[in-house]
Structure formats: C-alpha cells, structure tokens
Amino acid sequence: MEVVAHRGASAEIAEHTLGAYIEALEVGADALECDVRLSADGHLVCVHDRDLRRTAGDKGVVSRMELSELSELDFASWKKPWSDLDDEAPDLDPALGGVLTLRTLLATVADYGRPVELAIETKHPTRYGGLVEKRLIETLREFGWAGKKSPVRVMSFSHTALLRAHRLAPDLRMVQLVEKAHHWPVLRPVVPKDWIIGPGIKQLKLHPGLGEHLAREGRRMHVWTVNTEANLRICQDLGVEAVISDKPDLMLRLLGRK
Image (cartoon, rainbow, N blue to C red; front, side, top):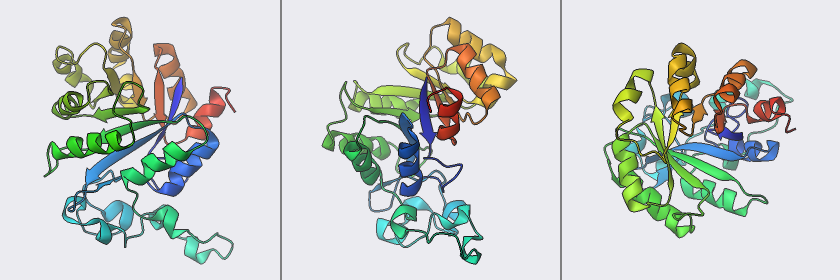
C-alpha cells in the first residue's frame, strides 16, 4: 500500500510548505499530495483554500494576487502560533514556510535521492477554468513528466477538469475524487475503467457499500484522509492501493515499514 503525504507531513508542519514536504520525504513517504491554484500572474502555487485567511492570516484571494505578493506572506506560523513565546523553539526558516510554487515542489522531488510520486489536485471552481490544467500539463512537460513513465497523477473532484487534463496528456493517470457517496452512481457511467477512484474515508465509513461496490468492480482506490489505525485497517480490508494521510510517518509504522 502506497503512503501519500497529504499536503506534506501536515499534521506536524504547516500544510503545503516546503518544510512539510521535506519532512514527508525524510520519514519515507512514497508520494506527496498537493493542491494547485493559479496566481494572478499565471504561477501554479500549492494552496488549498481560495483565500488566505486560514493559512496566511490574510484576506487576499489567491487568484487575485501575484506571486510576488504571495511571497511576502508567512504560510507557516499559524500551525504553531505560540512558538514566538517559546525561547527553546527553533527559528522558522522563511524558505521553508513561504508560499510554495508547484515548480519548486517538482524540482525538489526530481532532485531527491529516491523515486517519489506526486498526486496533484486541481481546485475548482476557479476564475481561470481550464487554464489550470493547461498550465499544469505545460509544467509537467518541462520536467518530462507528462508521459507514461511520469511519477505524477492528476486528481480532481471535477470530472470536467480531469477530462481536460486527459485530453492534454492522455498517458497520465487520472484520479476521480468522490466527495459524497451518492455522487458515485452519477459518475460511474462516465469515469473510464482505468481511472483511479478517490473516495474519502468518512464516506467509506458512513456508506460501507461504496467501498464494497468499488472493490467488487475492481476499481483502484486512493483514499483520503487516513490518519488512524482503525481507518487504515478499513482501507486494507478493501484492498485500497494508496492512503493519503496527514501522518505519513504513523501510516508507515502501522504498515510495518519503519
């Protein structure tokens, strides 16, 4: 079973920061998961929310800000708000806690000393529509990662977005994320058999029939967000291929890989 670091080692370090991803790599995560949005000047940045109130304490909206503006913000301090009062707490490295571009994350993975996969989610709805997928595939091509041997898979709750990405890079793996169990009957007829399905662990627990149905059909499953031993066991029983976790170190330990 593949262990995927959800927004990095985000239980311990602020999500989507370079520090969180480096920690995930160091503990041995098989893959890294990130969300991407387009800045006003066309840069793909790793940010989950459309606005920055939660992660940077700013009222700005990602799509309306240029990269230079985003680079002035602190994306790490919110995780440990009292650290400045702790004399023994290490100083936060601005390079590890600022806004992270997808290009920097890809370069980090490319330069790492072992193979690492990437699960990249495009966020929708967005003012830029299909431009997000276009820029994503263009960036992957620059790294030589838009073909069959790519370590990257593209994820989205938007089926339309995945169709766009598939048209642009038909050899890339696609992951159809499923937010609610009752969405699957609608998606099932239009999602190709070779696409991966990404249900949430909460839906698998609330609606056990969803996981059982996917398993019977032989659908590959990547499940989010799995942070406990009990939830990991549910995934194992269903034959889940990958678990996406805020706690990659814990998942690896529970799987006996540490």
